[in-house]
Image (cartoon, rainbow, N blue to C red; front, side, top):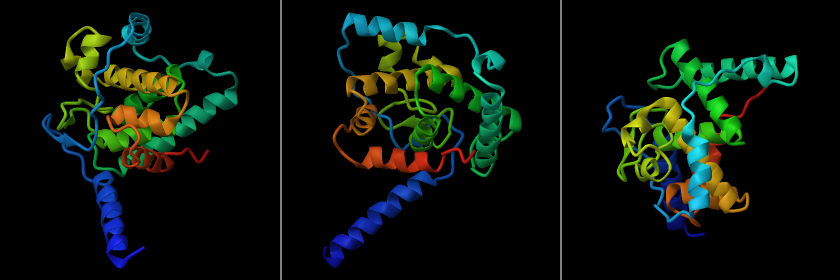
Length: 219
């Protein structure tokens, strides 16, 4: 590899890292790194399944019945405490223990409902919005998981403003990512590309998977 190519690669890597580490802004107009899912025609059967998946607005209620054993319950508590501590070190709007607790419990709940790895969802939120509830991308995607407004029309209630609601946004984002994973037969690289609107290109999947490693639970 030439010196020029090496230098260009270093600049690109530093650019990605600087975007991932960028401080969060609290304004609704704050631009997000990613979030440009492309609207595609969905079969009615697929729309029906996705509508059912996002339909409930009940808040997540995590209790002992959600865990097979006491150790599983304790692992959840330890996970939440560890992730809260990590989030507290970031410049995000999740400033208080209660805000972080609500966010993490909701993210845990929605990830489990959609059969997604917790570190993957945290990594995606990290890359997409840097944990900003009101982030808006240049493509118009909204919230923590940068959901495009057309999804509220296709499978929601038609009101894109609800995508700024924490549970609604995390629910939509997880359901959409699960849909893409199923569509791509479990291929995470291609599914993440679809989520970003850059299917087949490595930059976004690499960024999300890199960020996800930073959110793995040590136990």
